[in-house]
Image (cartoon, rainbow, N blue to C red):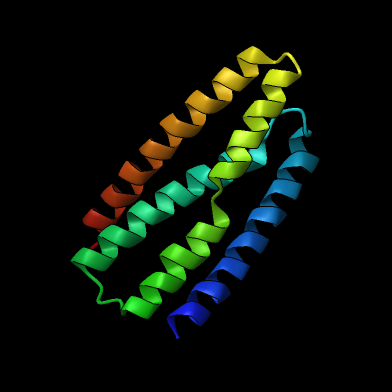
Length: 124
């Protein structure tokens, strides 16, 4: 059952990631990986929010946690895309954009986890 829950969550997360990346590229262009940045920041917020909520206020089953965190959020966020997009920026000579992308991805990702955890803690 856990494998099925992870697979279902991953399918949903991957499709959400793809859709958001396409939307961002259409909106702002594809010269900078806005879609992956947005996905990873939202995913970081969501994992902080869900895990704090699950440990302080909700009683999630192992299967539900695996579906949401490992499947959905694991399929939604992507470190390999961040790595490849950084490589692409560097090899195309966009060193400043690559540096900005890495710093903003990690900085905003970590901030997202703290923000998500904080929001979960203050919920009534």
